[in-house]
Length: 79
Image (cartoon, rainbow, N blue to C red; front, side, top):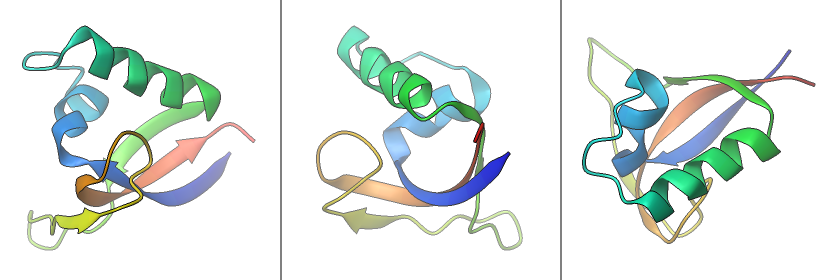
């Protein structure tokens, strides 16, 4: 297993962490699925939790998609 910290778009967190697709378009789901498969992702958890809070910030280079608000997440991948 390999671990890395990735800037994950906040709009994708419910799907990646809770498998909740509500509010996402088919294109967004396809984009997330492609990133998940291409990187052999096993799990995604928020990395910057402190007393249950995450600290989103704007990134020009999220893990996938266009520039947006992201949260640093710990990503477990198959090496």
